[in-house]
Every structure is written in C-alpha cells, then in structure tokens.
Amino acid sequence: MEENMGIGENNGQKVEDAESFSLQERNKVELMRAVVQKQDPSSQEVDDYAMRRFLRARDLDIEKASAMLLKYLKWKRTFMPKGCISTSEIQNEIAQNKMFMQGVDKQGRPIAVVYGGRHLQNKGGLEEFKRYVAFGLDKLCARTSPGKEKFVVIGDLEGFGYSNSDVRGYLASLSILQDFYPERLGKLFVVHVPYLFWTLYKIVCPFIDNNTKKKIIFVENKRLTSTLLEDIDESQLPEIYGGKQPLVPIHNA
Image: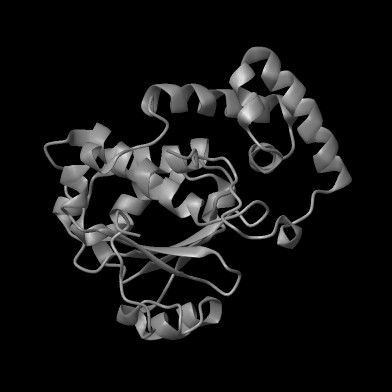
C-alpha cells in the first residue's frame, strides 16, 4: 500500500507546476528536518512539501512545527499500523453513503461532497468514525501533487437534524484535520444550512483555528449554484448542484 497520509505525492503531475519554496521556507525546512530526524528517524521519509505544510501551519516556527510533525508520526504508527485504513475497518460508516469524491476546482484541487444529514453514530463508535475520516482525507490527499496539496469540500447539511448532531464526532474529525493534515483544506463550502446547525456550530467554533475559519464559506440557498461556479467549472461540479459530474462514493473513487 502506498503511503499518502500527509505526505506529498506526484500522481503523474509535474513538480515544476508546483508552488515554489521561498528561500526562508527552504532554509527552515532543512533546519526542521535536522531537528525532527534526531528524535524520529522515520521522518526521513517525509518530503519537503509535507515539512513545509507543518511549518506553515505553525507560522514557520521550527520548534512548534517539529513538535506537530512528531505528534503526527507517532499518531500514524499507532492509528494506522499497516500504513493505511482498509474498507473492512469502516464498513458501518461506508454503509451510510455520506462521502463522495469527484472532479476538481479551477485550481485543480480535488472535490469531496459530505452529507452531514446522513451521519449517525453507529455500532462502530467514535473510533470507526475517526478511521473513516482519515480514510477519506487520505483519498483526497492521494489526488493532490507536491506543491498543489489542497482539496475542496462541499459540506451539505440538507436534512440535518438532532440525530446528526454528533459533537464528539465532529470535534474528533476537526482535530484530525487540523493536527494531522495541516494546510490541506483549501476551502469548505457549507450548503443547505438549517437553523439547528448554528447551535452545534457555536459549540465547535472555538476549536477551529483561525486559518481554518478563513476557509469556511456558508452559502445561501438562493446563491448555491452561482457561488460554487465561481470556483468550480460546470463540467467538474456535481450534478446535484447544477453541474455535470455524477457523485462517486469515496471508497470507490
């Protein structure tokens, strides 16, 4: 199995098209690599693009970024001892048919559609849900390339109710995204937002870091298609939002 968690991958695209390193970033990546390798030799497998993501997530502070990366490497070994999550480990979550991946936005970033109204706590509990979140993020990351490492998510809350208000689950998924997939989220469009959701959002909001908050866009129903088309071509937009792309379950993508 290939390693795609947090580590940049080429996927056949030319690295020349990638965002270049500034001189400051290049120097800090080298210094950070020296710091981290002394504490965890396995970090030599982490490429420079991944190092830069952790640095950027901590405002280029080498000490903080190194601690963040070391925490990620430890988590990866314990959470994914085989290097990845298999579909057999998340069968209850897959059955809810709530995450899809297809198309790219105008910047070439892969797009996921997540249905909050289909999420229910199941017999697999919080641990299976966390595995499902990591599985989905891995799938998205595998569609990116070095220097072009972000993805876009459309969070659809149509039909969202009390049974979907899984605060523990949402906080856990937020922690995974922010702590172990830094600088991966390009933009999050939240659509079909019901009034009930705002109560949940007030609970979760204090745990969202400022960089992530800047990437969240709450879309008015009357401007849904037009707003999405500003970032996504019609040929790449899912059919349910007025585009041409059929929804593909993420485990089949």
